[in-house]
Image (cartoon, rainbow, N blue to C red; front, top):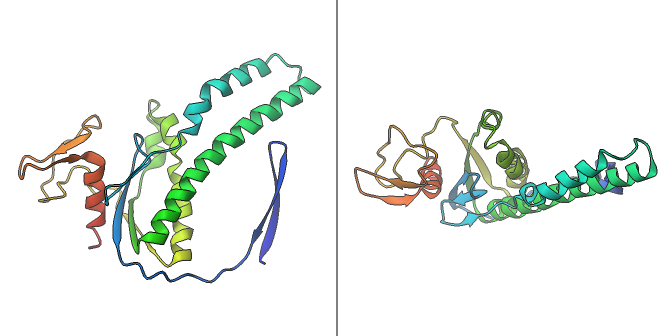
Length: 213
């Protein structure tokens, strides 16, 4: 055992242990591209679509009401402390649902594929869009990459980070023709050169997988 940490979340205490484990060599050779998004958490080049938990969006109204009711409580009072604990519990529940979805997805990828290619997303830049900021935060792209990084090391897989400026969405996965413009509202990619019609996110995921093949 390397270390242990005691932490408190809401009104519960947890202890976590850190220890060394042997790296597993599963011998997978398959290559997949993963396109992260807001409509769906991840679209894999195999055609699988993983929907995000969107836990914050699900409990936003309840959380807002609890916080609104709490503002009338006297600071430091018994009722005020109880209200704070209830709010902390809900925050913790939202985070746990999100983490559970990410753990299942990252484990699926790291255990079943030899090479996983993802984009180097400019999350801070994306968060500047106030219309999308809440949805982006709810998907937790940073946590996805953090989990995938250490799980790839654990299962002997390789994580490849594609260049941030790689035009995965604008390039035809069939013939390689690149579109000059592609608005976010265009959810279907249509190639004027070869006639390919394909889901935008799937097209991007396939292009990512081809960067190392």
